[in-house]
Length: 179
Image (tube, rainbow, N blue to C red; front, side, top):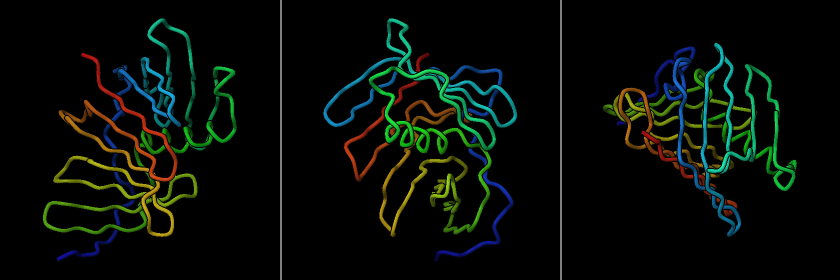
């Protein structure tokens, strides 16, 4: 039976929350039939600040973004990727990925599973916890899944595999942690 709980003030997304760690992933982005590979690096710089860098394996920067509490900065982006629609998609996807404590609107639970409804950049997101691990972040519109962040190979608040899949456009981001 699903029960509705009194929402806590915040939910904790533990991934990318350690400022002493550089999170480095092998990245593959498949967008509209085009494939881009490289290194994806996330660094927590402050209480509510993250920097995300995507480079080719040769070190050329494809994009470099900073997320502050209520701000977003494009530090650098490859000219061919500098499209407002693409930047907005990446901004939404990556903000949901690194936001540690989104405000909670509703909480539902069943046995060891919890579903937490939040609002990120004016869009509904649902955080799905299986036992204590955050397994999915799903953005919906009109009751349909638009984007799904799936976390796998979780160990000590670290996701070894992350898949960000868009259901309404051809875009998939696969991140695999490097040792």
